[in-house]
Every structure is written in C-alpha cells, then in structure tokens.
Length: 305
Image 1 (cartoon, one colour):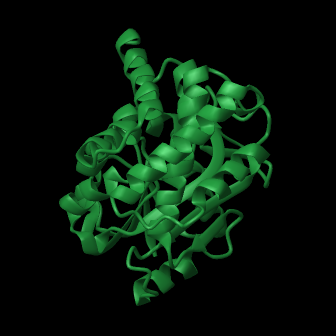
Image 2 (cartoon, one colour; image 1 turned 180 degrees about the horizontal axis):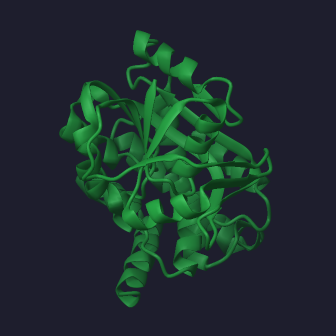
Image 3 (tube, one colour; image 1 turned 180 degrees about the vertical axis):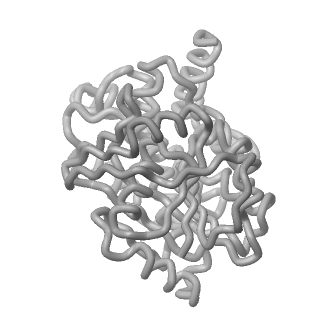
C-alpha cells in the first residue's frame, strides 16, 4: 500500500516514521525547507519506545506522482487549506484520506474538497515535538493512532488499512465508533487546552486551585452541552470520565496549544473554540467560560502579530 504523509512534523514524522521502520511504502509531502532538512539529517525519531533513523522518500506539491492509496493528514488547522491544495494532485478515485487533526470542522472541509466517501475518521494521542534540527522527540508511553470508517463499518478497504498499519512500534487501532471517539477527544482537548492556556500553567497547579478546579468542570459541562445540541454521539457520563482523566494527568502536563503560545506560534482558536461558540449561539447554549477562553486566545493572536 502506497502511503502519503502530509508533513513530516512532530505527529506525521512520528507515525510515518514508524510505518517506514516497519517496511511500508511511505512518502512525505513536505515544503522545501523541511525537504532540505530531511536530506541533510534524515528522519530521526528519538523515543521512549526506541529510536529510529532513515532517509525518507519526500515529495513536494509541484512534483508529479501517481495517486496514493492512503493520505495521512496531521497538519494544524490553520494550515488546512494549504494542505488540501497541496495534496489534491495525489488523490485518486480510490484514495482514502485519514485526517488526524483535533476538532471536527476540518471533516466538513475535507468532505467538501474530496467527497465524503474518501474521508475516514481519525485521531491520535502522542506527546511529540521537533527540536531545532528537525528531530522528532517523543516522550511519553502513549503513542496511539485511532482510525476507522465514519459509518463504523468494517469495509474491505479498512481491513487492508489495518493490515498496512499492523506490526509497527506505535499503536494503530481500528475503531468501530470513530466519530464518537473524535468528539470525546475534542471535548477533552478543548477543556485541557482551554484551561492551561487561560492560566498559563500546567494542569497540576490548576487542579490544586479551587477556582481552577471549578473552571475545569465548568468548561467540560459547557462544551459537552454544545456538542449534545449539535447531536454529537457523546457517551452518557463522558464528563465524569474525562474529569477523572484530567485528575490523573501528570502534574506538569501542558497542552500543545499552551506550548505554542509559549513559543509565540499560531494557535487554533477558531478551529477549536470559534466553531463551538457559533454552535452555542445557534442553539442558545450559555457558555461563559468558553467565551473567556476564546477571548484570551484572540487577544493573544492580536498581540502576537
């Protein structure tokens, strides 16, 4: 199976690299700067699950190639339009597209661009980053990529994808309820990213503060209410489950959004929170804490221009 990974960053580089390590036919669609970096240093993964180094196959948007069997997309939401444009020449009639972005609005964008039958459901849990030389640094036991047909069916093509993903040093897991899992992660990441970016602190000190602990529960409740108003297939007691997960997280755990703010990088304010606020307004759901978080991020965006 021919696999195209859009980008070779902290997420795409990690999971794509693990597939190369296994022996799959993987190509990375990259910009010129990253291509030069990979040609000079190779793709280097430094991980608690074992290191790996290779000289990967790369492709740029203006180059020619036959359509791929599957395209894995792991860009940030603010690069989504550019990513869609760059990958379009490599999408064929039978290409599966597996997006790993957080949130849900990108699914509509991708279905509009490529047709709903091509777009799978997907998400990932991995703590990874790039260092100054472009090395992928992966630092925690969790390195999961979850995927499946959005309908939940076990189709012939998804079984072939299971085979391609099996036997790697990362956890590639087929889900029959991928849409629910995507909404659950969206709820979790919206809460974690929201409170850590609001207080500019890891999750531990926030939990230990009465106001911070109350804010966590308020955001979980408000976001879940919006999602249910949208008809999202949330589990009945998902707020309790995710609250427990947040309580169990390491004291110094930070969200990737918070880390981006600390580095003065772009953030996904509209993709994460603007989408939910529009839905809240349409459905008359009161979300004061969500508005506070969104305001904080938009002020950050203005100040960092």
